[in-house]
Amino acid sequence: MTRKSQTIQSLIFTLGLAASLLPGQVLAQQPETDVLSPFSIVIKTGDDGFNLTCRQGCAWERLTFPLPVDGSAQGIDHRGLTDLIDRQAVADEDADFAPFVITISKSDNRVSLMGLDGTAWMTLGFTCPARGCNQIVDERGTYSPRFFF
Image 1 (cartoon, rainbow, N blue to C red):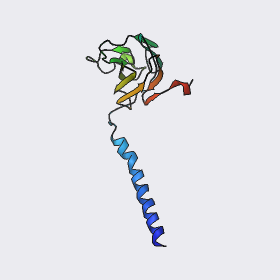
Image 2: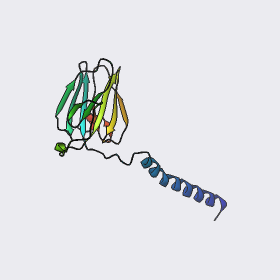
Image 3: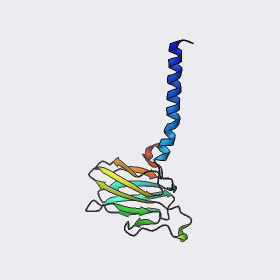
Image 4: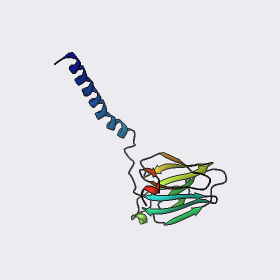
C-alpha cells in the first residue's frame, strides 16, 4: 500500500469516526425528560390577530384571538388558550390528549413560538408578510402547508 492510499484511508476512518459521534452529541443537547406530544396546528395571521386550527392532538378545533397590544406572547396548550403564570401539568381528565404548551407572538413581520412542554424545539420563528401567513407547527417544528395539502 502506498503512503498516499494509507493517508486517504486514515482520513476516511477519522471522518467516519467523527460522523458517528455527531448524533450522540446532538441527542445530548435535548433534555432527556422531554416527552414529545403529537399535535399539529395550522397558524394563520391577519390584521385582526391569530386564527389557529388544530389538526391533531387538541381538545379544541379552532382558536381566534387578537394580537396582544404590548407584543407579549399568548400561551396555548392542548385545551386552548392558557395562562402562562399558572400553568400546571395536564389534569387526568385530559387523558385523550398529550400535554403540550407553546407560546405564540407576532412583531412586525415575524411570528415567534416557544415550546415549553411536549415539543422537540425550544424556539421557532417564521416570516409573515403584512397580508398574512399560513404555517403548520407540530411537536417537531414548522413547515409550509402548501407541500401537504
